[in-house]
Length: 249
Ligand code: ADE
Image (cartoon, rainbow, N blue to C red; front, side):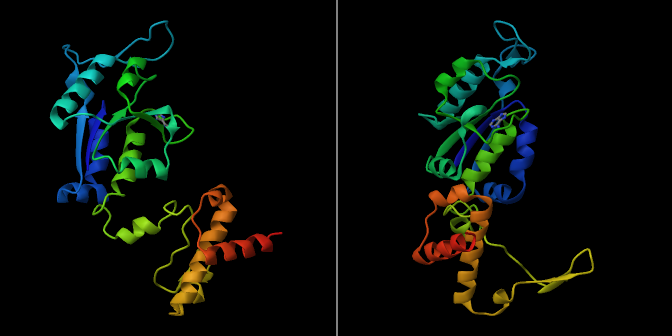
């Protein structure tokens, strides 16, 4: 899958993209990410990308022409039509389902917002506008990286073990069960020791599976009950959930 990320802070995006799982996927050629400096698409000597808002008011607005030039260049290079995602607090909330839909598109352009926003005419070339949450960040680079990461990890071959992608939180609409690793007993700060739940040391795989289902369900019920409305539950999980709900009556 190919991503073009248009930003006025390419170094910020480069640093994240080079590290970790995304970096390895790029090295292997599973993922192709091109970071484009919006200033490269200006035509003036000072490479100006912003201007004052018509009608007055604080802050600066990103000028439309460099963005249109960048999109024209990407279109010429990659072929049409482009799927352009604009990150902004005015967008639709970005979710796992949205990441899954975008992972079906072979090529994505991520436009990072800045300052007080974009000249609104840019929206004529935007396929979808996404917000990563109800808070305002200083710019669209972090949201664009969030979108890139969430979409890229769904591509086959990006995450080493496909099972961890299929089983993780939100893939089925449940939070994860708790995980433990060695040692089986560890000292905490107060001098107490905490043990891994016995069931995980039992070697009884049927019991372990049931315990994990119960933990995932009770966590979801406690922390994110809203998710349960759309969760895909099997019969055993539906029974466990009934028990858990009954227990809290
Ligand atoms: N730009 C600034 N804040 C944002 C947010 N919450 N989501 C997406 N883009 C943004």
